[in-house]
Amino acid sequence: MDRPRFIFLNDEFVPWEEAKVHVSTVAFKFGTAVFEGLRGYWNEQQQQMYLFQMDAHMHRLEFSQKFMRFEQIFDAAYVTEKTIELLRANEFRTTVHSMTTVFVDGFGGPTVCGPVGLAITAAPRAEPGLLKKGCTAQVSSWQRVADNAMPMRVKCNANYQNGRLAGLQAKADGYDTAILLNTRGRVAEGPGMCFFMIRDGVVSTPHTSSDILESITRSTVLELLREAGVETQERDIDRSELAAAEEAFFCGTAWEITPVVAIDKLKVGTGEVGPMVRNLQERFFSIATGESSDHPEWRTPVYEAD
Image (cartoon, rainbow, N blue to C red; front, side):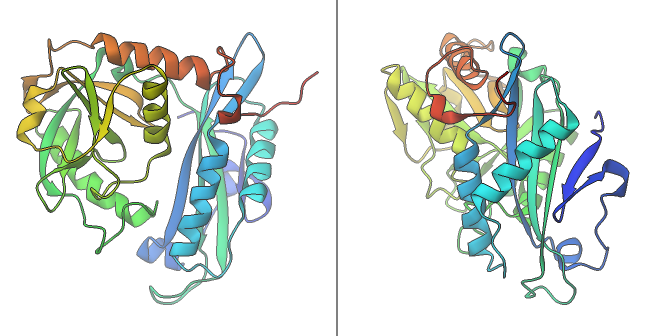
């Protein structure tokens, strides 16, 4: 990863090498932190970077802080302002991935709720090869954690250890990633991304009560599909139904729209990236990068107009 010049940490822009948190903090010891991942898409022709769905991400960050009972809430306006300042300070002229983390910066046990710190990082991120060729997935033996154990709709750092175990298992077994089932044996999501499948021309995805993150990219995809006149369903998906998928894909800030071409070594459809997913990718990226003027409310420009 290319290291940026600056990171925002606790109300200061500090050099990368100097961004440090004490190892005895509650966040370090117990994972008591929440975060948001964010994409800044660079448009070369316009010489502009667009933060995608910034408002939605920042409002979800507020919810996560509230749910975790942090003693201080960093509001959406403040975090947005500091994110834009950080991107400008680093003078990025390429697509970046930014991460905002709010963490318990104090000392003590797992129920300590403050003081609270804020860190914002951003770095260039190359286009993953899986976007074009698709990925392979394994239905994991690890179950998605239930909402009444560790609620997945809260973007808490500790939650991601569940998906990490599934991802590690999948890679050890020769797959690119994993699909987790929930405690009811129904499809939940991947390790950090939502799952969609297409069958008989209908696009289906697990509903938000399936122990999944209430994903902003997922909501965006559903809106784009409905605008295109595609029938969508939010419902339970059985494991066996995965074998009947004609196309499938993962979506998320990091994964964007990544096709799934095989599940448990069974081809999805033809085993190639299908036309519906490819069309969705084109539509998604044209809006995210500002090539299309549609949905300007989803884009926050970083640089001031000349």
